[in-house]
Image (cartoon, rainbow, N blue to C red; front, side):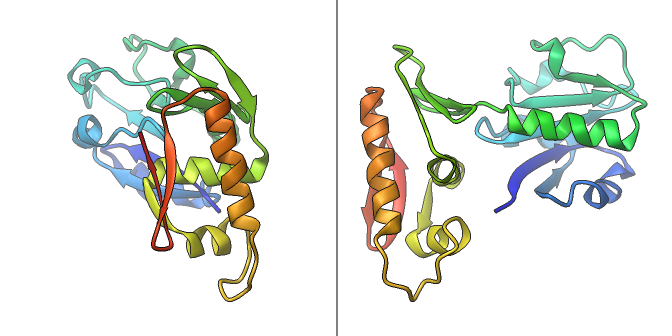
Length: 197
């Protein structure tokens, strides 16, 4: 399953990006859509050229934003998430891959970072397996999905196969959420999975 990547830009670079970011599911939007479309549970790439936008007008941008710009005096809360252009394609691709791999995925009272599930309020944590990480991250991003989608696209199990694999993974994820004393719940309703508080 491909990681989602939101890209905000105003110039023609959007036609060029899919050629070297084919490993990601890209959603490309205009810069004036930042305020309403920044996803705290997903990677956001903001490409700014020639004073396209005043970042202060966007509200508080999260650490899940990587800014690529030819402007030298950008004011952003996380200086390590600013790349100054020009950049080689390989450097840009490597930096985006590193950014996505080290992304914190936040949801209500916990976040996921480097396969670690951490409660924001009490710092309790536990580790997730790669499959648990994929399932939980997908649920956080979509809020609701079908069991069949998870089986086919994350577990690579054909929907007509009888298996308890998904239920086993969900049971372990629920236990880990309880272990860190989070209020988040994963519910099953009519073959649908929902994540709620």
